[in-house]
Amino acid sequence: MAWAALVAILVFFGTLLEGLRRRHVFQWLPGYWAVRRASEPTTNWPVHVLFCFVDHFEPGWKQPGVEVECARVDEWCRRYPALASRFVDADGCRPKHTFFFPEEEYRETHLDNLTALCAAGYGEVEIHLHHDNDTSEGLRTKLDRYTRTLAERHGLLSIDPKTQRTAWAFIHGNWCLDNSRPDGRWCGVNDELRVLAQSGCYADFTFPSAPSDTQTSTVNSIYYAIDDPERPKSHDRGTPARVGQPAVGDLLLIQGILGWDWSSRVFGIVPRIENSDIRKGQPPTPARVDRWVRLAPTVRGRPEWRFVKIHTHGAPETQHEVLLGPATAQMHEYLGKNYNDGRKYVLHYVSAREMYNIVKAAEAGLTGNPAQYRDYLLPPPSFAGKKAVS
Image (tube, rainbow, N blue to C red; front, side, top):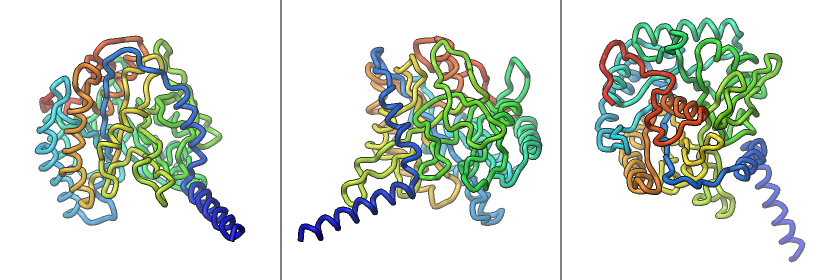
């Protein structure tokens, strides 16, 4: 009987370890504990919660045809203002959705509609890309062509006032930044970080990608990566952003939250992975909001500014009831009630561009209300000459 129990226990733990291995947990678990140990205590109150919702926005998901694509975009343009207009942060700003729109799915009508939505104050558009077996020059050509189109035809990208070049944020399709998938699929470019930076990318917002095998060992961090053009996944580690320290690499990465969801456990024992993903089956519950704020990345030396970045794949209609319905409304209600009292917490809704600006302001040693640095380095897009509403 005792031997049977021992065998059952060994089988259980063997199965558990195999499940963790298949979900690539051991790639990031040491980094998770390292950043927890390195976290700085907050001594300056209030804590400013900088909340950024980024979307791998793919109307062409599963190639449904133009009619369905248009219906998906129209649904967002119709329902998102009704949702977002119900909430404001400490600065009077509504929630801002950052649409990372895929280069390979470009349709002028989709971007025209999103331009109007963003010009009304509901978000911004940045760069998303799926590619496979690509080259450095092929990638450069795609980015240059696409960014010119978004900037010149739609007014959707910021213009760097120092260089007069378009400046944009990036999310890599299939999570495969810098050719990071072990089998080499869905990228092919080992010097991708350098190509992105040279083409105008100011920051990458791809991660976390767990449970994908593209997940970095660095988690819950804002950091700079140095590109090794001879090897993939140069961003696996880097130098943390720090007050008083200038940029020290090729590209800045602003990560979302990765950790454990102890409120949902496999076999009632093992916690599920918290990866900042909002979708059907993973609604933004109050427990998750608390976890995001607790584990949020910071700029070293400025622990009272917490950068909460969550993500979704929001275009498909299967996600609309979560993202445009009661679950997301309840998330915003909870944020306003629990993280915007003006004494312990102050809530700021920010776009990806604004989050980057505030990171750079923190590095420069600026203090006080971070909302005053929303446009610190990069100004808002022109939205094709339409006046944006703040």
